[in-house]
Length: 506
Image (cartoon, rainbow, N blue to C red; front, side):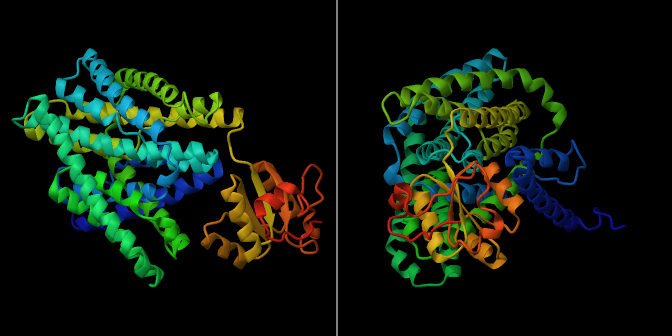
């Protein structure tokens, strides 16, 4: 048997195989059992590290390793930012959540950490890192729960904004302990410098993307994919060169300025960036989790639980303050308050600064990493459980419908329903038709068995079925008891479809 000691590159190749296999199993577990992807990835990461089979060994101090992890984080954050429609962002709500939440976290979390006898630098760094939330967790969770568009929009936008703020604050706090600048004015200027650098550089690259969109629309989709990556990485690299730790701000600004829906290859690009983001997310979570020794986590359960309790209190206070005036009902406000996970950026920051503290002669790097790792796991588990229970209890998910038959007209109908706040699901007896619908960023499945159709309707709690051909679907038994079928005479269908012909159902 070949020894890994004789062929060190083989460990990298086997590690890549493990990461891809874990990512595949994670997706299967999510689809089959509803297990959140992040929980599965963290478990696989622990299995690959010193607490498990010891397959993955990383030198996190090495600059190339840090660069790889940073670029993966950029991909994930850039993909999440491109989903945000700035025209519909509730600015007042986001501003209160970001400003008030940041202030409370930076006041309460360090004080709590000092009560557990953490060193001053670990206490302040823990507070700064706890500012960030988890858009990498929130995105998949929103896809699974399918809440109404406004709720998902607020949560995803908040996560992206707070990630950028948390990165900058963490860098400023670290600088106060490792540089000669000790006064609040120096710290304040450091923050302003990095924010301005990120905003300016991101605005330049975002504007370049908008101005060149007409040219991109005349090119092929493969050129569009590369150009989109160039914009994101260009914004990050330029900002980092100008002011360290300003890159994520630039990525966020660039992504917000790009008019993604105006691109000719929007659906192809959307599928591409989501696949790339999933691969980057899987890689980063597994690699970072693989560096954790599980024996060091047990002593951190008490302080981590205290930090999570403080984060819950802060979350409820800021959420209800931010939504006093707005379109949200009380049960929707409760749902918003229940979603507070920490994710990939928190783990990445904790890992980075845990390796940097000893280099500056500061103690507590292992404590910082261990306690924040436990905080991430607890917040993900609590947020997922609470949001699922609340969404089902209060009926916050978007109504589902099943459209039988895949054709240009039915896909147009599906998109109209999607824009109106419904979750359409296309079915067909043809594999080719299903594959085509999926390339158009629509959910679809091949169905040729009446029992599968009934099971699908029950599983998705579909409210109605739209049929495109009475003869094609007669064999599937659309007269199933308890299955409401809307036809084109329904006022609601006429309102949503707006002129798209829906033939008479069975």
